[in-house]
Amino acid sequence: MTQLSHQITHKEKVIISTFSVIYLIASIAMASLIANLLVERQVRTEQEALMNKLSMIRSNIESKVYIDTYLTDSLAMMVTIDPDFSLKHWDTIAQQLLKKATYVRNIAIAPNDVITRVYPLKGNEKALGINFRNIPAQYESVKQARKQASVYITHPLELVQGGRAIIARYPIFTDFPNNKAYWGTVSVVIDYQRLIADAGIASLPNTLIALTAQKGFFYGDDKVLNNFDAKLSVNLPSGGWELYANFSSIATPEVMKFRWAVQGCVIVICLLIYFVFTLLYRHYMFTHRDAMHDELTRLPNRRFALNHIGQLIERRAANESFVLLNIDLNNFKTINDTYGHNVGDEYLKYIADMLTRCVRKTDVVARMGGDEFIVVMRGIVTCAQVDLINYKIRRYFERHPFLWKTLRLHGSFAVGHVLFKGQDITLDALLALADQNMYREKANFKRKLGASKES
Image 1 (spheres, rainbow, N blue to C red):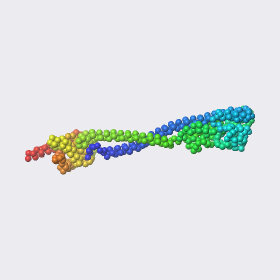
Image 2: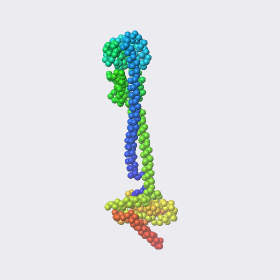
Image 3: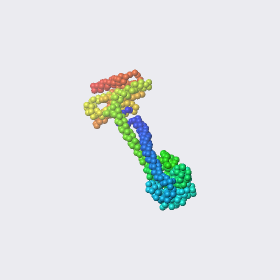
Image 4: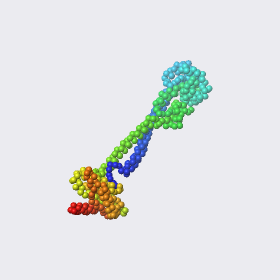
């Protein structure tokens, strides 16, 4: 039996459930995709900013080293011009240099590669008398400076007086500019750790840094050398360093919180869209259903019935058959006039309920208007089957009378039927045949009623 209500049907539940599952999966996938895209964009923006900072740090290191080494270059030139004068006035000359330099810890002069003067002396006493030839790690840089006849910047070395530092070696030649008569060196010890810190490495958040020279790694995290996102060359007066960086911002709690926040927002938006769509769809279903059902009896209405019968006729399949029962109530006007329209409405509901109970769930019971109902039952092919159906319906009504307070009525109606078995007939013609048969039975009912009154 087909009866419309504001309850969701099984088919509609399947449609909504299937749509909900697909929509949920799509929403999660879309949320993940959007979150990934936004996170990648944020990370890319952050990495570009970090790259700019990294380039600035590289420039800072280069400029700071160049400033201090070129300040010291004037001292080396003075020693070249007059070594004896420089040795005699060493403290005064070195003091003036240190006032201008920022990262120079001390300066030493080594005629014939043996340190004879160091400034400041305090804290560097152990450096006096050092013969570079006896310290291979340092003598190599002395030889390199002598070989290239220009300043040579070492990688960080262990100092005799303690600590580590980079050293700028200035070779001194007494036959400048031929540079054949080697006199010794001027060594400038530079606090590279403070220099690098002041260059801004500490200002790089969520970034791992490593610095290497020709001799290998000397600052930061050596793991970065095997997994780096950026590599910049730090150009120094002689050779240079390599600056490596690994941007680990993708794994920071802030970025993960941002990812979850984006996913949560997208899912919330998707859920809001889902609920709005569901409400609109349910509203559409109920509105559509309201247009196809009778408000009083909750049965399908005339529009639904005509559409349903028309579809059955259009199929015209060889095995498609149905019976159309046209039911008209007897004496309904009398019930209305005698007991009132409220009772009449309840009586119509009673008729609708009894008819739906008498037929199968696959059959259609509809109210055509007023006191007229129709029943469409598929699979009926003979008049004997129709007679049996009529008999069962009448017997059911006899056993289940209409009860209203003290009122007791048995449903009384005339039934006209027409069989459809694929014949060439229009909807209007089919309905007209059912009407004719119904009116014929109604006329018979009136004749019998008149005869009974006369007797």
